Structure formats: C-alpha cells, structure tokens
Length: 391
Image (cartoon, rainbow, N blue to C red):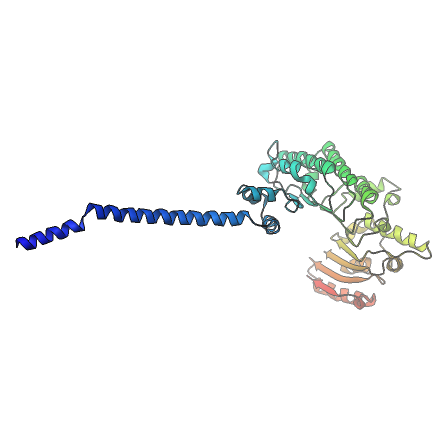
C-alpha cells in the first residue's frame, strides 16, 4: 500500500511541479504576446498600406463622402490630410445650410469657404425651406452675402446654380433684398468662364432680372452654354406696365452666341427675347446660324393669367429655325381648363417640338387629350415629335 501511496504522491508531485507550471505559463504568455504583437504588426501594416493610397483613389473616396465624413477622414493620417486639400475634393461645393447653422452668428461652413474657395469650380446654393422662421431667414441672407463676396474675390467658376430663394425673398425687407441682388450681381460680374447658370425659383423684380441677364452677357457671353431661368421674375406684369420701354431693355437670344440649352418659363422676358430676335433676323439677308439646339419651355399659368402676352406666331418660329437649324423644343404644359385655347397659344406650325409633356387637373382631361391630338396633326407637329407624355 505504501508503495502505491508513494507512487501516487510522486505522481501528484510531478503534476504540480512549480517549475513545469511556471514554464508552461511563460510559454503561454509568450505565445499571447507574440500573437498580440503579430496582430498589431498586421494592423500597422494595414494602416501603412491605407496611408499609402495613391492620390487618385484617395480623391475618389473623398468624392463619395459628405463634408462631415471628409473631415473625419482627413484626421486619419498625414497623407489623407493632404488629400483633403486637393482641388478635386473641392471642385464641387454645395451651400445647403441646416437650421442649426442658420441660427449661428458665425457659420462654420464659412471657414471652409475661406480656405478652399479658390478651388471651387461648380457651386450650388439653396435658399431656406418654408419651415424656417424669419430670424433664420435673415441669418441665411447674411451668410449668403458673405459667401457670395468670398466667391467674388477668390473664385472663377464653371457653373453656378441658385435654387429656392422664393421663401427668402418673401420674408425680407427691401434693404436686404437689394443687398442680395447686389451680391449676386457683383459675383456674376467677376466670372468670365461660366458655362452653366441656373436660377430655379428665384423670383427677382423685373429690373433686377434684366440687370442680371445683362451682366451675364457682358461677362460670360462667349462661354455660357446652358441657362435656366425657372420662376425668375416676380410680379412682372405690374413692373412692365409701369415701363413703356420694358421690352427694349431685354437682350436677344443671339446675345448668348455659345448657348446650347435654354430652359425658361413662358414669360414676358421669354416672349420678347424671341420676338426681338425674329425681327432682327428678318433685317439680315445672310444671318450666321447659331448653336442653340434645345429650348425647354415651361408653363403652369392659367389661361386667364396669360392675357397680357401677345403670343408667338408660326412666322416667328420659321425665322427662328433659320437662325437655329438644329433647334428642338421641349414643351412642358400644366393646364387646369380651357385646354383648346392653351394648345392653340403654345403649339404652332413651324415650331420644332420634339418633346411634349402635358398634365391636366381638369376632370375633362380625356376630352382635352383628343383636342391635343387634333391640334398636333393640324400643326404637323407629329413630323418631328419624338416624345409625348400625358398625365
């Protein structure tokens, strides 16, 4: 029994030998350290590889991110920070201020504008939405004027888009309105390479709208290829009636010799630009053809609201095709009633309509569609109509 006992004791002693235990623990600890070190080395190598990204893919990654994520990305390493300052990251800039930014005395976005505006080439500016109160609208105006002044000093753009200033213009006093118009005018006067300009729902008074067009002609007439003027004039009839020479102040389409696309509401400005251009063509025997190839004309007025317009004629469109042989017209009509009169006013012989969108809120819309088809056939519009959308 003793031998057996002794043997068990010896066996137990071997099992709990402190030296062996310590050696085993040291091996395990060493293995853990090596594993951890290996993982850390692997992570470092990965980070090193990420930090060594060539500039082109790095700039591509930046282009998919919003400004906040771009800032966070720029903090990762020195290489990424340098990439953040590359021209491609700042080529396109959108000024969409949030309500929290409206409420700040000093808008943080302006810091980026001050630092990087020289790299801007394409800028889009959006006015405040309807839910913003009057105080925040005033703050937006202040930030916008500062933004415009910075661009005037530092930037030569290729494109600029002004959107949704309607709510802003209806909630500011005349002094602030004049300051905004002056800031936009000064900015446009400083630009000499604009290819695209858009005013979408920015209803200026008649005189300011004419002034802005004149400034564009004086400074970007050779470069401008795309012009959008959607709800560009507010209360134009009132202003026009007070000025007997209103039409003579307007430019002609030929004043934009490089223009390829024009998007406009049917308005006094549009009508008289076309009428004056047609009259000028008739006085020249051999007029030089121009490059305007797409005219997008939009109307959502009631027919009764169009009483102050003279309307265009098939003769006018015949002369327009002489000057613009590649011209195609896209016509977008929203009608509530009196469909026949609206069709006869807008759709004329010799008018090269290639696309027509028609929507009606009248319960007799089906009858109006039949009237539309008859009118299209009588004007021979079907000979060049490529797209027709009925809603």
